Length: 89
Image 1 (tube, rainbow, N blue to C red):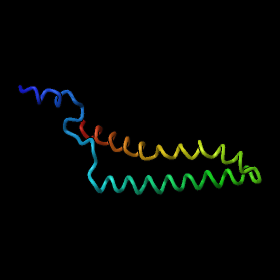
Image 2 (cartoon, helix red, strand yellow):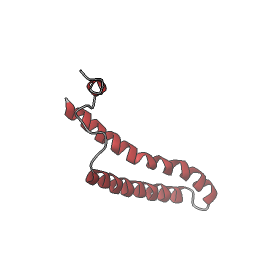
Image 3 (cartoon, rainbow, N blue to C red):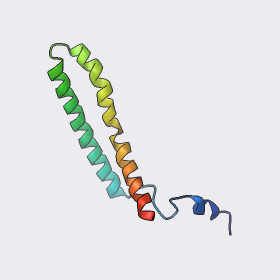
Image 4 (cartoon, rainbow, N blue to C red):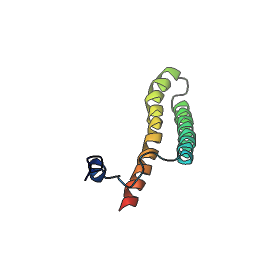
């Protein structure tokens, strides 16, 4: 057996794809952008209602909460990879 085939046999995704096709990438970008934007709007609205008149405190609390929504594309891609692995079984 040639040496070039050995790593592919040990790699668990030998029959699967690690990089999605273009339409899937575009869909992930669109869904991630919309969900991140809606999350930012929701956090901003909640902070405005809770800390009315205290903008400096609300911004200080809002920034870490909003940054959590930046992980949405990572979670979507991880879900896609999970489906790829599950499909290999």
